[in-house]
View (cartoon, helix red, strand yellow):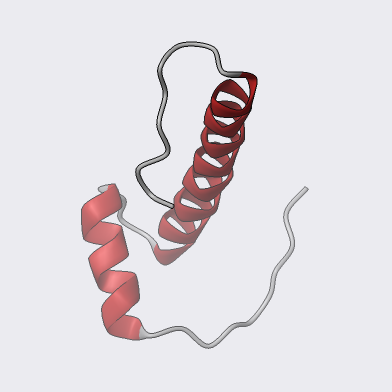
Length: 63
């Protein structure tokens, strides 16, 4: 399901995101950025679980 919405965005930031994400439209850039954010959060949770359980020799270098 798609929803049309209106938001105020930094135009320079959006242009940089389109270039980095290699997409041609603002909609694609926003969608891909949101998807990657969710994927990163899932990976972070999985790594935290591994660290918490003590499996392997993982160390949280970001905290």
